[in-house]
Length: 293
Image (cartoon, rainbow, N blue to C red):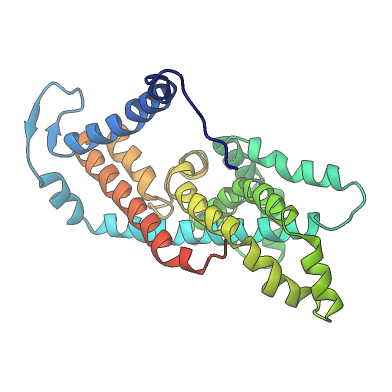
């Protein structure tokens, strides 16, 4: 028999929900509505003069060729970060799920990087990949590669992708490990008795049962790559060289905070929000169909 919660007072459920609703409205819906309203305004940097310009901010933004380059940078960056962080987290989780000596220490060390702030992660990788001081940069140059992320846009993009993906691997590892622990061992043992090898067991049994976790992490990683990597890019490249690593979220900051274009940056934030909402809707509409719950 299923138990149901019974409230003695009719207003108690609303009182319990009120704090969460207040936080959502104040810190999400209100700033979003403010951004939409400001995207129709033209203001000076000090907010002293304001005029309503309708869609001029959007028209001016969509007429800039460099904005489409920023969109392409964001697509490449977010795709690379999501693929690297998800695949690496899954590989490490599968390895950690096996009976190993000091498995607890191994798992703890893999979780630690998630506690590192994005800006700190960016600085750490910048030290390792700096063309003249970095230890990894010296190894890359020893292979015959003229590594210089300060001047080469492709090298700079590779650097910020590695730093951003490394920051997210621990988060993915933790959820994949929990998903693997929830899979009944009897199913895997039965497949092993039937003669299925480890690779076949993983792709036909383990991964389909792990698909809800993988789908959840896919959505989270896409949102992370679009928004939470700002600190990494700001600490490592500031969008350079020549805007090669400038993503949509960093362009909002650069044009609004540094350039003083408040209306244009608000329009960019609205477009960015619509892109993320659209991508999330597409994932739930098409990819979730292949998820086995």
